[in-house]
Image 1 (cartoon, rainbow, N blue to C red):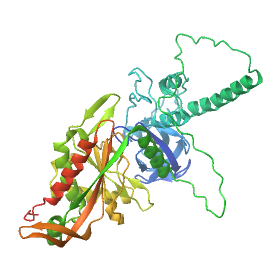
Image 2: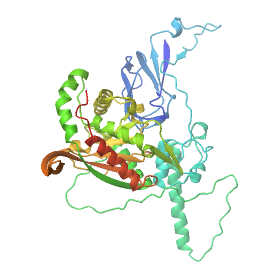
Image 3: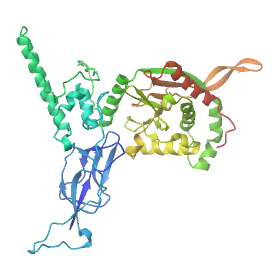
Image 4: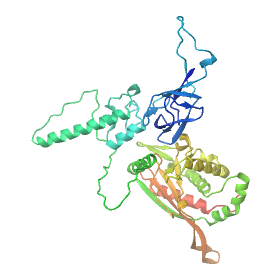
Length: 453
């Protein structure tokens, strides 16, 4: 017999831990190679973990709901094969030695990376998982206060249990202090100086708005948010809090573009095997405008602006659950129209089937959301952090419009659409944000009707 360690797999470059959603197999049950043994979730995507070998589940080391670092052993599987192709050896007294444990699953070293809750955190700060940081942000715990919490995890890491325990005692202390102050309003207390080695608590760097409680009347149904909806809600509120959102609107006459696509979509699909939608055409214009306005392809790090050299375009995809996900086209400026179409169609199809890889959901530098898909004329999209801008493309409609000709002005039926550009006013002023979206509109209007597929 051989024993195989199943480790928490690495789900992406920036993913350092995952949450166990469900064990599909229990201790004592048989499992086949490549059969799903458990389901996990990260901040990016849900995924299934297959068994690395045929055998029987002998040990499960973590329970559903536990957050586990990548590379950590989560289960032991006993197989019929003998480790190393040999029979188990015996010791000098004739007793059989314990079977050797083999790691068939990919070994992933746990390498903590510095993650800061607030601007100004030092590089020497301890590692904090995204889950711990989210809890700290919700509870208004500052970075110095977080650093003072004793961690029970590996290397002194603060775990979910540690911070929730701290939040509980913190609330009790606050309540006790309030009661004491109420009972003895005239008593003046002299604060005891904190030890030099303990950082003093500072006000939270990120002000959190407490949700008000409302009474509800009438008939209604209570629907609990699923995990993805909770993440979307938190990210949207955070983006609105961190970025000064401004939205500029431009109307574009895309008649030439629409006519060209109608003439060529059948030939395009026959030649490349891909449907030609408007999205890759929009993205081609966005890429050119980003090259001309590189500040829009950036992010903010404290008081520094990080201008990205790569152009990685995120595309918002609506899921069958009505949730939203944003896969990323890496190095989109290196692809031609056929390449963009293939990549967009592939990402959208796999997104709706929940088959995206975590790496395909990170690294975006600019996002495009096609709200016209739902028949919307325009929208005010929310910036996807840490990006600084996002474009919403509205529905294309046939409208009467004034057209200037050599013979004079005339009324004609034209295909028109609105472009909505939301940008972070901390670093992008109206002149830049407005100029960018106007440039995208001009590029769409100037589409060459003789373009070859």
